[in-house]
Length: 473
Image: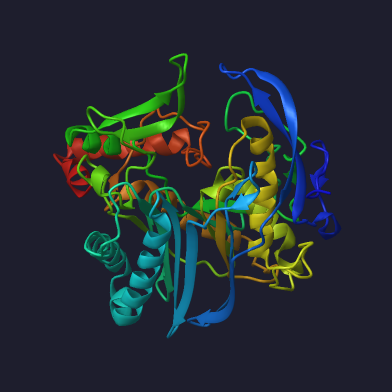
């Protein structure tokens, strides 16, 4: 009985290795009041299957796309019951334009809120299609703001409930992404050359006591692809976010354990008070947090599509990013996407009966078993959308890949910029905190930060101010 496992020292190398079952036997650590492990309890769990799957073949201005999505609901291993899912997504194609949305809800009314936001945004896209073609960034912001406002008037209690989201629009001008909170989107693209890059062993980093287990294994990629972040998590301890929240009267602090030691991510609190405890600085809903500096304004980025280099996009909730980093995700998708032939919800799940989106969700859930065993935690909702821009290995002219890389060299700025004003993350920001929603995948490299500071210094020398960035936030 159990979901498949492989020794931590091994790698996922072939499609025959890939199979997931719908039951698992876990050895959950027993701990005393100070967190010391005193023993373990065996737990047999039946795993729920995917509750929402969608596949779509479409074209965006002569670019053929294959798209699929999947959701696995959260699970409490103690009672073996799946909770109502607080993740959802939608995929819509209209007149050569692709519209994808993914929501990660929270709070007692999170399920109602994600359903409301999903319907509102689908309707908004259909009714305002031309605006997305003409000014996608401004229209995404307008849509999210209106959704937040209409939600507050809907009768759904959203004082302590809300959702985070990613909105992606793809048209003839490129890829346009807006993010509110923690869900992320990443683009997999061919690197500047064919030289191999370092592929670090996978590791769970939720909690200092977690070490590599049988559920953590690396993926031997079929070829090297480079991850390009299309979004940035908005955490309350980032410098500008922190400034806005504290100036509005909020407090940004971590929780403490029984011994007074800080644990988990930074959260937003009333002053004084023990609510709302949000781990994100931007959200839809969460009316109480809106009184202390949390906002619904998405950070929007636009990226040109390089059809010879760009391979696929992954949009995913924390259920994936908390246990897999961006390199692991793109290696997994690249390794198995061309072998996936189905879209059923049957078990055992494998490439012959599943989409690549479902297999990625199943792999993430498998990795959650290590967290369950060590921390006695619930398995989070897991969801993703995968957009394949290229289903075959492209042949690029000699030197073309380097040209693409040179052209895109500044595009990562768009992930950490708001209207061209550079947003520099707090250098003291805590990463890899032991709580869901706290993982930061990828890193903002030192050279990017140094370049950002150089731009700020140049603007200051020219008499320009960075105050606009604060006002926009």
